[in-house]
Structure formats: structure tokens, C-alpha cells
Amino acid sequence: MAHKILVVEDEQPLNQQLREFLNNAGYETAGAADGGAAIDVFNQYQPDLVLLDVMLPVRTGTEVCRIIRETSGVPIIMLTALTEQEDVIAGLEAGADDYIKKPFEPNEFLARIKARLRPIQFSTDAGELKIGPLVIDVAGHEVRRDGERISLTPLEFSLLQTLAEKPKQVFSREMLLEKVWGYQYKADTRLVNVHVQRLRSKIEDDPEDPKIVVTERGVGYKAGHP
Ligand code: CA
Image (tube, rainbow, N blue to C red; front, side):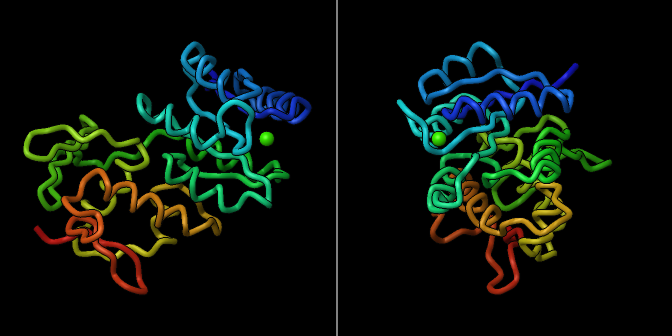
């Protein structure tokens, strides 16, 4: 079955153009033209991925992102104009998985969407992994701390799993972009920084003094020792 993509964009010609482009690429689409309708259409349509413009009437893309993330780990890609680069970080902090700059380069645009819709890779001997006080049930796609489940998006889960699988290895941001995001080409390493911060806010006792996902200064990140 074709994946369903919700396009939230208030510029009607662009919304139409994006949907036609995606339909031609084999996706089903629905559209919304403001941040209020976006939530209604999201709930009815249950998309597999959301393309979300930053500047929208009624509610901003960042607010829409935050509302969707209260109930869903669906992949969200923000659409940003060159002048909205500060909003990129706000959108990522609100829970978006990635962003794409307007105007779009069609091949890169499709590659980013495909990467977010690919199934999360499981390790072959998927069982339980431990990282600090966390237990990661890889097959069940669950993270628990003291028996209590922590709600992570699929991307946050994949990031944590990647670090936990090789506890001695330091991962550079570029390695994580390749392994977790599935990007073979140069992407914005801020994606990794913001996702690590968001992950820490969910799993660490004190996100400012992290013990589970540790920074190796000048290199990247690794799993903290128990
Ligand atoms: Ca707009």
C-alpha cells in the first residue's frame, strides 16, 4: 500500500505542486492550508509522514509539531524558507525529525522522504540492550527505566539503540546521520545535536549533566558506562 503523506503548506500553488509531485512518485497525499486544519486532517487521515511548513496561519508549524508529538511518533519534516533558519532549531526541538529548505531540489526532497519512511533497522540478534539504567527491548521497540516505559519517537529509539549496541564506540555526528537518519550525503549535523538533547530530556536524571548519552568533546557521542 502506498504511504500517506500530509502536506501542510499555506501557499496553495506550492501545496498543490508538492502533492502532485508526491502523487507522481507513488505516494497518497492530503493537504492542509493552516495550522488548525493540520491537526484535524492529521487525526482523520492518519498519515505515515507529515511535511510541515514553519510559517502558517492559526498555529505555527512548530506548535503543530508539538501537538502531534503529544500523541504520535510519526515522521515529521519541516519545510523552511532560507530566512527561517532560526525556526529550524525550534521545529527540531518541538519534535521534528528533519527539515528541508525551500526551494526544493527534487531528488534530495524525495531521498529525505524515503529515508524517513524506511523501516527502522533491527539488529540481527535483537534482544534486550542495556545502557546505564535503561533497558531497551529491541524487538518490542520499548525503552524502560525502573520498569517504567519511556515514550520515544522511532528516530529517538534508533539513535539510542545505535549507541547502546556498541557501548565502547564514539560515534561522530556524520556517522549518526548515516546510521540513524540513513543519509549518505552531507546533512546538517545540528539534527544530531538537537535529537541528542531531546533524547536526554526524556531519559537522563539531569539532562544538563548526562550520564547515559555522553558527549566526547570534539568527536561526537557515546553510551555512558553503567
Ligand atoms: Ca508559509
